[in-house]
Image (cartoon, helix red, strand yellow):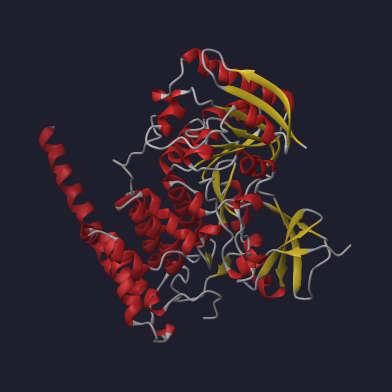
Length: 48
Length: 457
């Protein structure tokens, strides 16, 4: 990389870590939403 | 003939620079930036950002280049007043931060990103934060994390978190630290509870630690796996970190100023109408209101189509002023935190990267209401010093003189010896006559206050 500002080695590595960790959270969040949707569907059928 | 002046505010980036020719601002785009510049235009990113009002528009010109490295000279739309982040209130800085993230997010969709995230690249234009550096975009490369991430945290996140968790006055640290507040310093100033916020923990505490750990180490960037969705995740996370910040519960002595003022509604209305009359007489196109509080009098000028810089030294008064302007969609007001007794200095290399407040102000009319007693009595300033200073800010002056008989002045003298023997209407006029000619004088009804219209001599 040829950059005119110093990005900072720590700042670069940290972004890799954040992306990794948050990526996993995003993945879980996706499932969580699906599960919630399943329950809300059930509730809907119960209400009917 | 050759009166081109290269502005030192843009020397860091070799993609180009800003210069002034015949009082017009131009930007030279260098050959080294040609590919990126062409991509900015051809990808449609430029049009998208202009459409959303996020980038300052420019036109391509045939102007003579400054140096042989030139690819093209562009002429950006001129911003009426360049302000700096230490002059912005909490919400102004917050909006500037969110604008930067929005631009970065959109740029990613067009195969580009922001190569810098300096708060100085954002200016308020028609009250909206816009990016003024058209050379900030770079074509994405594979596996490249955001190189401006650290700068973003130092310029935006850090001061906002300090303002939110400690005190709104913390933005003044930006005056000292030109490239944003160093993160190792920020974490020392934050309370322990800030660590319990996941976002702040990673972007500030962990970030500071990582910086320290890798201080002198290089990095093989090929080892990093990083793609577009990762970049989006980080922007999204920074956005929610910033959106969640608030300054609830902080108060100031000036916020209720008008509800506790010592004069009647009639006097207040009378004062408003004489100010309006004076503005009609002068017909200015630009104004500066000093000690504007929440901007009641600035708005009289704005409503007449006058671009008005509305200054006060109280950061919360400026916050209210800005929020109100946003709510009512006022375009001609620019609220700024300015302490007149110690206005913004010139900072950076050779003291010429960022200009002083006085260097930047050149208006048609200066409005200074309920201010003279604070300067002359609280700050012990001689009338002649005040007159000499105000003369340099504009052609005309609307100024209010508040005599010693006024309860506000009495309050200022309550706990101190009255050494201000010469504080009188006659002496005020005598001293101001050295710099101004009094055009009109009006005594406000039901009060001892006098409003003058003066013209610079």
